[in-house]
Amino acid sequence: MSVEHGPGRLRNYNDNNSKSSGLITGAFNILYGKICASCSCKTTLWFLGAPMQNEWLYIGLFLVIGIIVPVVPLVFARLVAPRKPNPIKQSTYECGIETVGDSWVQFKAQYYIFALVFLVFDVESVFLFPWALTLKQLPLFVVLEGVLFIGILVTGLVYAWRKGMLEWV
Amino acid sequence: MTFWNNPINFISTWLTGVLTGWRLPAALSTILLYVVGITVLIIFAMTLDIGLVWIERKVVARFQDRLGPNRIGPFGLIQPVADIIKMVIKEDITPDGADKIIYNIAPVLAATSVIVLWAILPLASTIYGVDLNVGLLYIVAAGALGTLAIIMAGWSSNNKYALLGAFRMVSNMISYEIPMVIILLVPTILANTMSVRGITQAQTGMWFAILSPLALLIFLISAIAELGRSPFDLNEAESEIVAGFHIEYTGMKFGWFYAGELLHAFTFGGFMAILFFGGYGGFFGLEKLAFFSWLNIPFVQALVFIAKAMFGYWVIMWIKYSVPRIRIDHMLAFNWKFLVPLSLVVLVNTAVLNKVLIFLPSWLYVLGMFGSNLVIGFVTVEILRAYGRKQRKAEQKPGPQTQTQEQAL
Image (cartoon, rainbow over all chains, first blue to last red; front, side, top):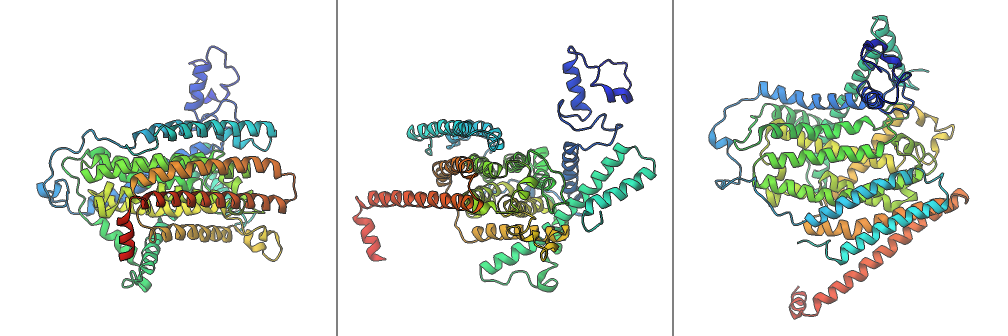
């Protein structure tokens, strides 16, 4: 992978990648649409290259159009709707009472311990997806090992429960 | 390959031919094709959304013994269009103290987070946006985006009610998301794939709703919590914090929060249909019979899917308009002390039984899965009942007061 390659020649960049330029190749892979180095997607230089079946390109376009569609009525409303601002109208709504102080204050979230437990569980439940996905191919022994992992999770939950973590403080 | 068998492929082949005729590069024509397809899909979703406004108002009226909109057009059908016109021509107010950039991004993000879910929603066997092999994780990710929009709206409004709404939304998120993620593993195990299309196809013989009714129940509860609908509508809670996170929004910006919520509810009805009721596929292999072969036509499949999604949507509405709001600490306790353990038990049960019973004849397999769920459900109810009895006894001990109250009643 060298710099003097023109954009059109990048199609074969994977053939001559040396060990030293692995990082650069990876960056090019991501930049030019080949998300994973080892997958079978045929994408090359996505704006010039051969026909491709890149589902993540579809998701990306979906995100862009999904942002444009809600913006269009808002822009239209800006053109059509009246705009007569005044200080009373622009003030913070608090059921008629004049607002006191700023609302961007430090606020005690009484469920913060729940949030800590949540973080642990959220990370650990991700590890279960590969296990669940390959369950059919796995022997019963490995399935029970997964159950053991869940058992450790449950032990953690029971510990947190007994220690009074799952209480409103 | 005709139009009726594979409409998307038919149109895309034709359009590719046209674009190649214009000597466009292949990649560019693919992108153009994607853009056309995505625009059509999103416009379909938005049109459906307009219909949902009417359906929601009619159904809530029926639940509350009213008539609902019935003046504009036949049965009030033009009412949502009138609503949209009204919202567009209303003045758009941004409060002086608000963080203007985040304040304006939030409603767009609220709508986008729902729209992106439609990318993986398979309407029929050949009508779908994209078939991701990590579809279920994509659902969770897009759901988090919607939560983020609500938190952004609540924080940036610089209003105390809105801030409380955002705080409550965070509590919603940290309570429902674990049961949701764990229970999404159950269809993954049963179908052996995470792509929503694969899960649909795995249910041609038997719906997962029958293999694991408890998983369906937990998914429904956590989906309602993610939507922030009653009984988990703590982030809006009209009677406590006026309108919660969208208190300062007017006009079309409020409209996007409202439309986004309705479409979100429908989309989750759709995912419930996909994960547990066989999605676009018919009813227990009925479509394999020659007499019912018309069920395999893509447009009929799409109708079947929308009917099933409407059923899920109707259940969510039914719960919304019959159950009172849950208190915030009760919600956290309910999710962490009841839903998380139960979903872990259901997951272990599904994993082990699926491994052990798979060698048995299929009717025994189905019976075993269903029966084990029944047993778990029964034991859970018994534990809860015993706990309730204990609690009532503890309350009655000090209580001549409670007894006199009961006697007075």
